Length: 301
Image (cartoon, rainbow, N blue to C red):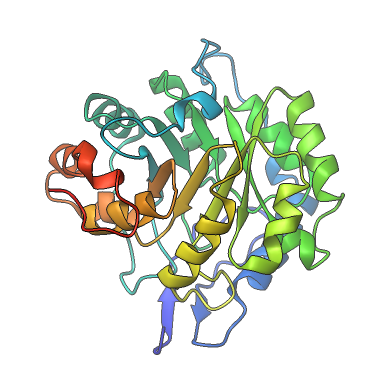
């Protein structure tokens, strides 16, 4: 990003109501973690949902859902109200039940919801509404640093949680990354550990994660680096765990690129929110089998 942009914030207890401003060299992740620390102190994650809010029904395990098939990588579709990596003030989002229905009928394999109010406009209440509306596995995609967030994810119906190798490397977690993975497993949650650069790969591999993810977006600067993501994906593709490419998925070109690099699944959010016909957009991402059978070659139709 080269220009500053004001990002929307949904006010919550213990949280500043002013928008976050991101510039080319600002440390966005540090700012989010600072806010999460405040949210933890003020009890944001202590909220307990009612029985009516969360469906206790069984779901397909996330690890099973995120496997490529003859039509290319599995699709994880994300619900968020704002994207700090983009210039627009707000994203056009569907109500939770409508979002879940469209994703299911259009062939999504899993859902992701950002429950973070700061900069993304999410909430635990909305997360619970999504889990109640779908049988697909749902990823709790917060900036997790503490077990309280993992407990909140379990209480609100999550199938899995996202943990960042970058925060482990920076010493920002309240417990070692492998311990947070263990705690998630104790709460019957699967874990996706995300990396951005090669230095973080050993941290993720030793974490005990169920799924590995490569984010092409640098969460410090918010810049997209797809070439770096491809290099990291290729270093991880021999690992037997599902491998997810994250961020910057605009259409089939990116899906094909990451499929050839070894991704079993792709996670997309902003492009879905921008689509005039979300169902048609998701169906357009399903690839012809030839698209994934010749790494380094010409993509299939």
